[in-house]
Length: 95
Length: 386
Image (cartoon, rainbow over all chains, first blue to last red; front, top):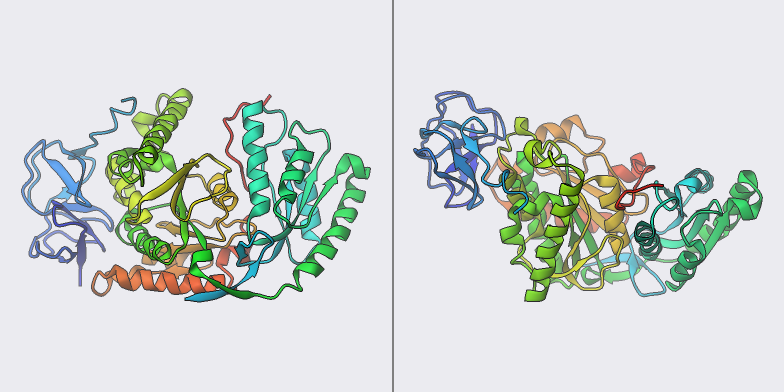
């Protein structure tokens, strides 16, 4: 069984708990309300995919907190990582 | 739940019963290793500080060495020195003796060379260990425990499973009157909005905010590129996308209790409950801070595998990465990856960790104790060596 985890009910991303191949429909554990998402590319173990459509400049939420912002439109089930997410904090270290 | 431990003169409870051979300066490390290496029941603590340093750094090293001598896992201590170091060795010995434990000093200059220092150290150490071995374990409670919380070589499973699991364990230890300790300030800078609200009083919240400011200043003074590449903090290949994500995974290991007090590096913990010490992420310095704090046991969660131990404090290695648990079997004590096999139930994994704590405090040896992966430790200083 392929699995992914959602840490908080506010989250809009899930984390893969095994290698997920394109087109698979992982069972969601943790906060389970978002079942049935089909992943749109291969997702490595420990990496994330979107639980819903995320327009550009949307806050990415994991652990119920903001972990960054989308830098392009992200489709539900799409791989979410450095290619489409930016940190909100990396430029503000001196503040 | 109770366990059997070793009662010390200050009423603290050790879970191990070692003679510590503690080097006062980098120049005496060899002596510490040679004395401890000749004695069954002795362990050496070595580091690279204690001489040719500025006053502020020497103060940090002194208080760390005194605090280490107080660690309840030590029956007694032999401090070793070269004899000419900047650090005030006599004062360290005097302060360590206030613990009520047997404390001795061997100096290469005073003894007349390395050979005589080793033989004198072994001679004294033998008597101390013989005394130590006569102590019987007595019943103690969770309230007597101080447990360090640390993560190392994290991956994305650390923040999903092992860190939140030890967070639950930390809450449980504190509910039973015990104490837990965390630090690694550089790792939670990006969750400062959450952590700085966790102080028990507004004063403690202010101390946390100031600690974060000091840490940022320390980093900025030393490396202006730290902010850009952050390679020290973030490995994208393992699935962590941003430093915020990493920091949030980090703070889940502190559970939900309020922070009682913020301490400087090398200080001993005075408050029951959750405490925060100013120490960095790197293991040799971090584990030393936890041992100096008075921790009898350290829980270390790891994703891709961290082998570090400490000479006289068991470091219980926990992973929720199944591959790591099998690939680094000789470093990992506890595999909780099965949580992802069934229902995601952190009660299950935290119970497993809690039970293993009881085993280890009662004497079960951890992998790093058996491997002796602890010969080269460190003390954090501001850095200038002259």
